Image (cartoon, rainbow over all chains, first blue to last red; front, side, top):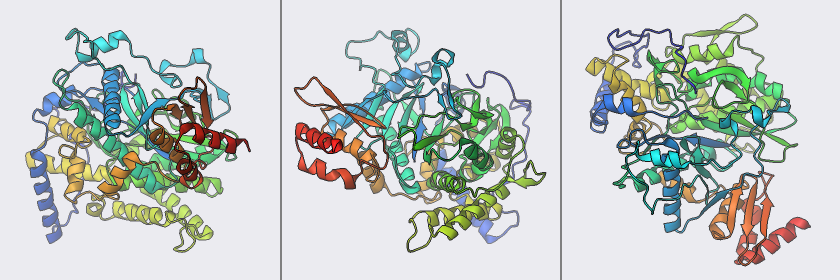
Amino acid sequence: MAGQEQKSTQPRGEDEAVEVDVPAPAAPEASAQDTASTQGVDDLLDEIDNVLETNAEEFVRGFVQKGGQ
Amino acid sequence: MGSETEFGIHAPTSPGANATYLSSQVIAAYARLTRSASRAETGWDYTDETPLRDARGWSVARSQAHPDQLTDAEPVLTAEAVALAHGPAEIELDGDQEPALMNLVLGNGARLYVDHAHPEYSSPEVTNPRDALLWDVAGDAVALATVRALAGDEARGPINLYKNNTDGKGASYGSHENYLVPRSVPFSDLVRGLTPFFVSRQLVCGSGRVGLGQDGKGPGYQISQRADYFEAEVGLETTMRRPIINTRDEPHAVADKYRRLHVIIGDANVSHVANYLKFGTTALVLSLIEAGRAPQVEVHEPVSAMHRLSHDTSLGEKVRLLDGRQVTGLELQWMYFEAAAKLAADSGVASADGGDGHTAEVLGRWERALTDLGGDRDAAAGYVEWLAKLRVLEGYRSRDGLVWGDARLGLVDIQWSDVRPERGIALRLAARGSLETMVDPGSVAAAVTEPPPDTRAWFRGTSIKRFPGSVVSASWDSVVFAAPGSYRLQRVPTREPLRGTKALTQGLFDEHARIEDFLAALLGERRT
């Protein structure tokens, strides 16, 4: 089955908290549009907070699939 | 063309339950729903399946094949698997257990079945990307209907379905596309023309994934759900050593006229635009290859190039071409876009009058996506799925100071694709207008029960709906009837995908209400 070999050479684990280079989706320069966009994301997160499964740790651990095509 | 969607399956209160058994319960739940709603479904006809035939001109011996490759026989659920369904030694099987139902053909022409350990919806054949999107979204509605139906089961608890491709721990399951290609196009032309396109297509239609590497343990975020699971350039397998170009030669059609190109590198998309562009742009590239006008590019080490492009959300990563050039994924996509736009202009296929009504829209949306991805990423986040998801994840990271290994980000990644509109994050975004939609709920509801009118799926779906008790099985290229009182089965081949349309067969259905008369007229007509 896929994934049985440990191929990743990346550091792992939460303690190491390695950040990878992922730029923020918003444009870098500050503008009225940026503020509106940030506000939109905040509203969105508030909405998502209410529907997220309650125990993230347990859910993510329990979401185990068999391989498929 | 058509889609195949394998859903992730999760029974939160039955950890350790057998996934194949759970999947069979999903199929059974839909069978109960369709029967009670007087819609119809029927079993699968395996006669014409050839999963071991390779497009490069040979077949794998059955004895040499991995059991996962033997998709030409009904999967058998063992008693042990059923017993494990509720967790180890938890309950005894009771007498009213549903029989393990593994396969249905639906009244809309689709197939709903257990594929390995997942419920899979294979859409009916359609002729254009808009219909491909619509009948794929109809599959999400089918999945939702089963989740609702199973939600109240007190013994087993609910079963939830996810339109994604990985559990983030090493397992991956696919969402495939199929395209009918003239057999006269050499397979090597397909490999050469498609590989650079597939290496970069994820930038437009990837659905985004938390975690790097097959086991997802590398911290970070990447563009594609599937990219890391690909290990080969060309091959027959779909469950191991996955290749960028799959060679399964199982045409489900007139074999010397067509091949079915089986595309396995795609991500499952909840974003309508991403899903639409996945089908639309690939179809345009196939037209380029057929016309001998695909861009002349070859990517050095395409598997690793695909991985690297997936891992770089800044889109600055470059891949090396065999001619020495270094290009970004976006530049590769632009090459294909420009060649497709030129071909469309030369042939008139995208013109307002005399065009095909689809090419102009695909080109327009493709150009917009490439332009936005290269500049206005905020705009792109309104329809490019991996960017929309990244936007939410970055929101959590900056608001709550989460690092990439945090379970909440992993949760958002999975719950993004929950098929329930109240739970699925992508569907929540769509409901509030933050993720662009292209098909309305009314059209989707219709596509759940109605087959597309312009392919053989019309004949298949309408036969099943009109004569529910008399269609004993069906497949892409056959419908098998059993007239009442007759011991003889009548197998009607449907090898030509563009026959059996509404225009060709509606009259026959209208004129003959009785199955005996219908078959006599149909077969009489076919004999002449």
